[in-house]
Length: 85
Image (tube, rainbow, N blue to C red; front, side, top):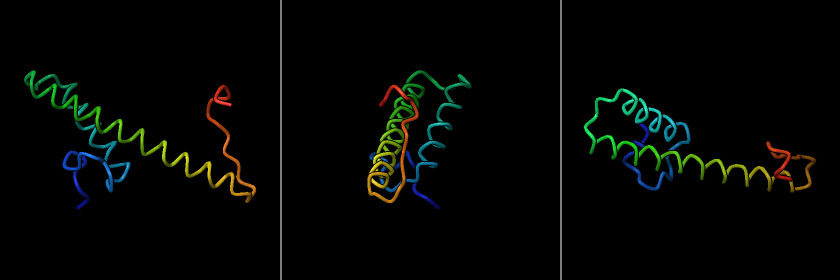
Protein backbone atom coordinates (compact mmCIF):
# COMPACT_ATOMS: atom_id res chain seq x y z
CA UNK A 1 0.00 0.00 0.00
CA UNK A 2 1.49 3.39 -0.98
CA UNK A 3 2.19 5.92 1.76
CA UNK A 4 -0.67 8.26 2.54
CA UNK A 5 -0.10 11.74 1.09
CA UNK A 6 -1.29 13.16 4.38
CA UNK A 7 1.33 11.13 6.28
CA UNK A 8 4.19 12.56 4.22
CA UNK A 9 4.38 16.33 4.82
CA UNK A 10 6.95 16.96 2.09
CA UNK A 11 5.06 15.03 -0.59
CA UNK A 12 8.29 13.38 -1.71
CA UNK A 13 8.18 9.73 -2.73
CA UNK A 14 4.40 9.92 -3.01
CA UNK A 15 3.14 9.42 -6.57
CA UNK A 16 1.51 12.46 -8.17
CA UNK A 17 -1.74 10.55 -8.55
CA UNK A 18 -1.84 9.83 -4.80
CA UNK A 19 -1.22 13.49 -3.96
CA UNK A 20 -4.05 14.53 -6.26
CA UNK A 21 -6.38 11.82 -4.93
CA UNK A 22 -5.71 12.99 -1.37
CA UNK A 23 -6.56 16.58 -2.29
CA UNK A 24 -9.72 15.45 -4.09
CA UNK A 25 -10.80 13.37 -1.09
CA UNK A 26 -10.36 16.33 1.23
CA UNK A 27 -12.20 18.62 -1.19
CA UNK A 28 -15.08 16.14 -1.20
CA UNK A 29 -15.24 16.24 2.58
CA UNK A 30 -15.29 20.03 2.51
CA UNK A 31 -18.01 20.09 -0.15
CA UNK A 32 -20.24 17.90 2.01
CA UNK A 33 -20.21 20.65 4.64
CA UNK A 34 -20.43 18.23 7.56
CA UNK A 35 -17.01 18.96 9.11
CA UNK A 36 -16.78 21.14 12.20
CA UNK A 37 -15.06 24.46 11.53
CA UNK A 38 -11.70 23.43 12.99
CA UNK A 39 -11.65 20.16 11.04
CA UNK A 40 -12.70 21.98 7.88
CA UNK A 41 -9.79 24.40 8.26
CA UNK A 42 -7.40 21.47 8.81
CA UNK A 43 -8.78 19.70 5.71
CA UNK A 44 -8.49 22.88 3.64
CA UNK A 45 -4.91 23.47 4.80
CA UNK A 46 -3.93 19.88 4.00
CA UNK A 47 -5.65 19.97 0.60
CA UNK A 48 -3.76 23.15 -0.29
CA UNK A 49 -0.47 21.56 0.81
CA UNK A 50 -1.18 18.55 -1.40
CA UNK A 51 -2.08 20.78 -4.36
CA UNK A 52 1.14 22.77 -3.92
CA UNK A 53 3.07 19.48 -3.90
CA UNK A 54 1.25 18.50 -7.13
CA UNK A 55 2.20 21.81 -8.72
CA UNK A 56 5.82 21.47 -7.68
CA UNK A 57 5.95 17.91 -9.00
CA UNK A 58 4.53 19.08 -12.35
CA UNK A 59 7.06 21.93 -12.53
CA UNK A 60 9.93 19.48 -11.94
CA UNK A 61 8.62 17.11 -14.60
CA UNK A 62 8.23 19.96 -17.07
CA UNK A 63 11.82 21.02 -16.38
CA UNK A 64 12.99 17.45 -17.00
CA UNK A 65 11.06 17.43 -20.28
CA UNK A 66 12.65 20.75 -21.27
CA UNK A 67 16.11 19.34 -20.54
CA UNK A 68 15.32 16.35 -22.72
CA UNK A 69 14.11 18.68 -25.46
CA UNK A 70 17.34 20.67 -25.25
CA UNK A 71 19.36 17.46 -25.41
CA UNK A 72 19.62 17.67 -29.18
CA UNK A 73 17.66 14.50 -29.92
CA UNK A 74 15.14 16.37 -32.01
CA UNK A 75 12.58 16.56 -29.22
CA UNK A 76 10.87 19.87 -28.69
CA UNK A 77 8.52 20.99 -25.92
CA UNK A 78 6.29 23.90 -26.83
CA UNK A 79 4.77 25.93 -23.99
CA UNK A 80 1.07 25.36 -23.42
CA UNK A 81 0.52 29.12 -23.44
CA UNK A 82 2.10 30.83 -26.49
CA UNK A 83 2.58 33.96 -24.34
CA UNK A 84 5.10 32.01 -22.22
CA UNK A 85 7.46 32.26 -25.13
